[in-house]
Image 1 (cartoon, rainbow, N blue to C red):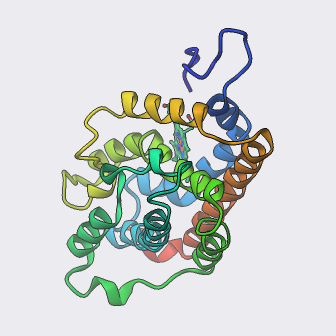
Image 2: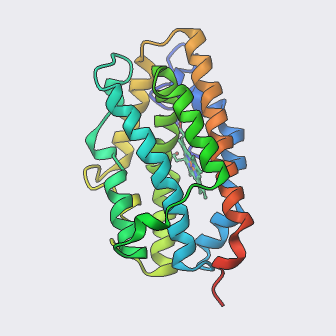
Length: 228
Ligand code: HEM
């Protein structure tokens, strides 16, 4: 974590919404980060099929999230956050085709935690724009942050260059930092009441738990993915 004072840190010392969102979900982020599945993956200990399983579950989540995004295309709160360059479904499709072959779709089955994640998206991301923003933030800002570290570690551990790693490569966003700064500025000026800001924070904490449970499900099945 950087100790830099962010744009969202206002002059009067009161934290802006982006800063508050980050701080008030930091504990949940740390808990999610500590996944044995992710550690084994980043240490190069899992097979490419183990990695593909993470992408397969992610594919189901992003397909639902990006479907919800299309519904909100004209919504005043959501529209500023939507950006073609962020969309991950085409990259996930390409990675899964590369890793599992042309019949990859038949191999994609939701784990129980993914079912719960998808059910939550159905519940809050389609009819409630702040709920969509919460789920948009946690995935895409995460992919542009820790995701970029993961990308370099996967590159090193498995030798992937572009194929298999497209999920982590944002071709339209060559520099994540200014993009993330601008995203945080949008969070700061988003038309959200105090009450709704708190509900977004709560929903991001729920979403971290859902991501943690997804890692736990992958972890439960991890033995079959170890390479000798
Ligand atoms: C091994 C796993 C992970 C690592 C190493 C990691 C690492 C990081 C780091 C270093 C940052 C700060 C980047 C910056 O200052 O710009 C960050 C931010 C973030 N990460 Fe993670 N992360 C991991 C997993 C996750 C997961 C699973 C999620 C959610 C699904 C997630 C969501 C986020 C979000 C939303 C931010 C942005 C916080 C903000 O500035 O508002 N991360 N991550």
